[in-house]
Amino acid sequence: MTILQDLVDARRRGAPRGITSVCSAHPVVIETALAHGRDLGAPVLIEATCNQVNQDGGYTGMTPADFHRFVLDRAGACGFDSGRLVLGGDHLGPNPWRHLDAAQAMDKAEAMMTAFVAAGFAKIHLDASMGCRGEPEALDDETTARRAARLTRAAEKAAREAGLPPPVYIIGTEVPTPGGALHALDGLQPTSAAAARRTIATHREIFRLEGVEEALERVIGVVVQPGVEFGHEDVVVYEPEKARELVAVLDDEPSLVFEAHSTDYQPRDRLARLVADGFVILKVGPGLTFALREALYGLDLIAGELEPGYAERSLTKAMEALMLAEPGYWQRYYHGGPAEQRVLRHYSYSDRIRYYWPHPAAIRAVEALARTLAGRALPATLVHQFLPAADNAGNGRDAPLDMAACLALAVRRVLDDYASAAAPEAGRSEAAG
Image (cartoon, rainbow, N blue to C red):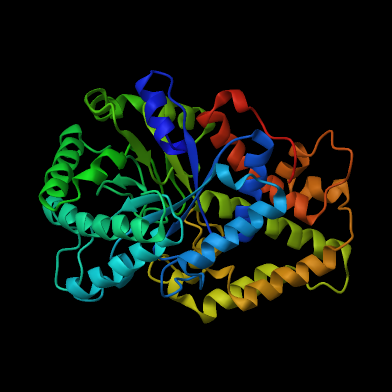
């Protein structure tokens, strides 16, 4: 039984446990997540989306094999047992190529699936719910399931040819907007129980008709909307009473759990309740890089105070110039006047600035900050002023904080909330990695 299949068994036994799905390709986030898992003795699930990583490179420039090597290298460097690492592919389907005709887009999606599974990704989220050129924006359950079955066939074949165990699958078509909602939020309705049952039944029927019924026993989860979301400036927290009928679906489906997307910024107690209710795979991405950006911007201010030759808010200004020069990742998402857009570019919960950190200009700006702070123990008074969360987390430490410790603490603060919810006995991690 695999790490993820164990979660299904735990739920069936009435003792639900969860796992954090780290949806990021940022090196600091990946390294910190692995060190966090090492310190807690817990498995780590890291997922790459179809837009981040694919056979064409995605926005990170990495293929699935590249990403696999990247994560394994960092696991080895921090002493994390790679046997407790699970790599997942998120939203695997035609989304990156939906501007093409369906036939072309699905050919590309099939090649991507083959590349992910052959590279050793053991968890696959099948997401063929989006329309391609000339199709409705969202497809019906039957079309979605038929395309998912085609991708499953490619995944099964890739595993056999690579001599790897076949992956486990997540199905589900009711997926929150990747990266957060695009409008103000004042409430959200969970997926209806009827819709969840229909999705499950349709996939089972189509998978059998399409000859991939053997994979059904490895469909362990369903993506549904539990009623959680975040927008640019809003967070909708989980309300268990609204999801009661949806949660009851699992009573009739003992071989399944729910996967919850967009759980970023949920309070710790709501994360714990999500796990207790069967949403045992908790996806977080922008919330981690949001915390990282907060720490980088605080360090940017500290550097300006410590070093007269460091231009005031140098990193912040470099990121603003980059985002204005290349607005493709934010322009159609952030509306309003120039001042409002500027705030959203840097501080939106949607955190679309995360797409810019791999850019050479951003890397140079972060490296300049690192050079300025290299070898410096950060004065406690400046940490208290500009990074109060790191200051509080660092209380009782033997050594003063430095840049690397501040960044790790920022990410760990988020991961601690998830670890507490997923396995309350794990408690809070202490090391900065």
